[in-house]
Amino acid sequence: MSGIKPTTSERVFDVANIVFLIFLSLMFVIPFLAVLSTSFISAEESMRRGAFVLIPERLDFAAYDVLLNRGKIILNAYQVTIFRVVVGTILNLLFTSMLAYGLARRSLPGRNGLVLFIFLTMIFQGGLIPNYMLMDTLGLKDTLWVLILPSLISAWNLFILRNFFMGLPEELEESAVIDGATPLLILFKIVIPLSMPAMATIGLFYAVHHWNDWFGASIYINDVNKMPVQVIMRNILLTGITQNEAQLEYVRNPPPAATLKSAVIMISTLPILFVYPFLQKYFVKGVMVGSIKG
Image (cartoon, rainbow, N blue to C red; front, top):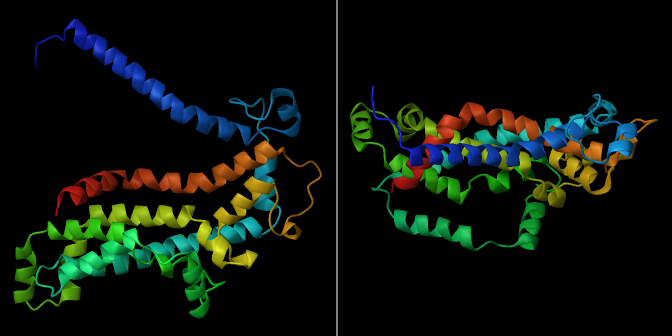
């Protein structure tokens, strides 16, 4: 154990650093707590204390009752979103890993040309109208697959995963080839198990994208029963109502607009926040390794 005592300047720096970090943490935590608390205030308390409060006098679950128990529209939207996140993320990881593995092989003919072509898609895009016409021609419009297939492979995530694959020792694959392993067997039995930090990182990127995205559904989906929760929540935030109020039962004492909107924010935010702590260590390691390998 070191017997060197910190100097006065080092102590001052440590105290200032702690105070700054506490202040920075409060800047993020207090708004979140304010929204959480506001989602539990009643109409009577809102009239007395204002729209946003930090500590409610009593918990009122009327806003959550309206959103979750007064009809099937919100629960149905959650089912659509969960299907999109789970199925979409699995397909994203499957196709992204297969393409990244192929592009990571230095023996692939025309590899540099393919990488350049994929890189150009990050800069130039076809535009909204051509994409809409394409989805309509392919018969994907107003289906759940239109929320998944157009974003099946992200060029940015592809390059991160490709760089990670390129950092793996080639001797592992050479020994597997000598033992008679096929490229698919090498990918799923050797490469992917060794790349779990990067896979978890890319999977988190894809899952957050699917959970937060509302624009694609608002463009390609007209059936309210196929809309994800983000579109329904966005409509409530903007107008205070859903696109189909008939699916909500009558509420005698409706919650205030600020309370309803705060509850919408919490319902749409908390599920994805609970996933991040379990993937945090893989997330940090995967981003760092994928960024320095090349």
